[in-house]
Image (cartoon, rainbow, N blue to C red; front, top):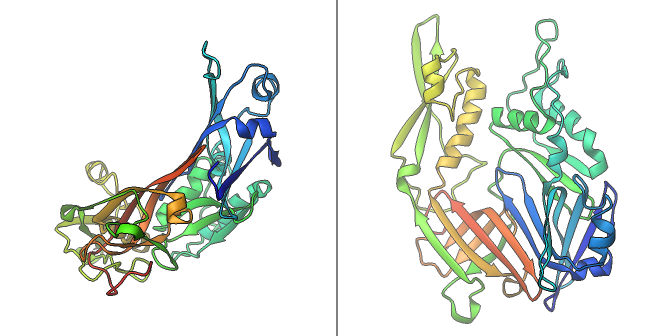
Length: 390
C-alpha cells in the first residue's frame, strides 16, 4: 500500500476477525460507494492463487458466503476510518489459465441488507408514533453494533388503538424508509466511529455543520484534486404548491412551500429563481389519473401536515441546481472525503467557489493508489464569505 495509507480487513458471521495476511496481500482492489438517499455498497477483488488460503479453505467453507460480514478500515497517516461495514451478497470467481490471473470478487452492501430479508407485513404496531416504530425496529439489529440516532418528526401521529391498529408494511428496511419518506426524512446507516459500530440515522437531511477541508482547483501547488467540473441547471428548480382542500367551504387553498429552511440553508448568496410549479394535493383522496400523474409526489392520501413535510423535502431536493463532479488522490487531499457532509471549494471562480453538499463518494483502493470520485450539489451560487478556508 501507499506510504501513509494502510488498511485492515475483517470478515466473519456477525463477530468479525482480521483475515490472514495472505488474504490481505491478495487484495487487488477495494471499491466502496456511498450516495445520499441510497444504501452503500462495496466490491473487493482478490487474486485467487491455486492452493492458497482463499481457494483451499475460505471458498470451500462458509467464510465468504452471504450474508457474512465485512469490515474495511483504512488508516490515512495513522488516522483510522471505517470505510465499510457491510454483508456479502454474492461472490464471483473468474479462473484463468495464465498464472496469477484468476480472481475472486466479493460484492455486498451495508448492514441495512440484514433489515431487508424478511417481509414483516403481519406485525402489528399499536399506538406507536413513527419515532418509536423506528427505534423498535432498529433495536432488533443490535448484534451489528447499530445504534439509532432518531430526530423526532413534526407529525407525532399516534394511531388510536381503539380505532386502528396499523401493521408494518414490507421488510424492516422498507418500512423504516417509508416512515422517513412520509415525514420528509431520510434513513441510512453509517459505519463507525470504531470497527463493529454503526450509526442508524433517521431524520432530516443535514446540510449544515462542520465543513470538510476545501477542494482546491486551478491553484498551482495548492491544487489537491485531479479534476473538478461544474454544472448549473436552472430549469430543474421547482416550487411545490400544497393544495389544501376545505370540503365544507368547497375551497382549495394553494400554499407554496419554501425550499430554503433552517434545515436547508442557502449555501451561496445568489439563489436561483424557480421556473416551474408543481401542485401537490392534500386533504382529499386523489383520483387514479392524479395518482398516475403525480406518481413521484402522490401525497394526496396524506393529511396537510404530512403533505407539507414531504413537500419541504421535495423542494429542498429540486433546489440543488448547481452540481459538481471530480476526482482526487487521497494522499494529496490529506484525508478521506466523506459523503453526506459539507465541503468547501476554492479556485473555481466567484460563481462556483463556496460550500457544497457531498452527494456521493466512490473510494477505490489499489496497491500504490487510493483515489476517490465524488459528486457535489448546492442550492445557490457565489460563496457566502469572501474567501473559502483551505
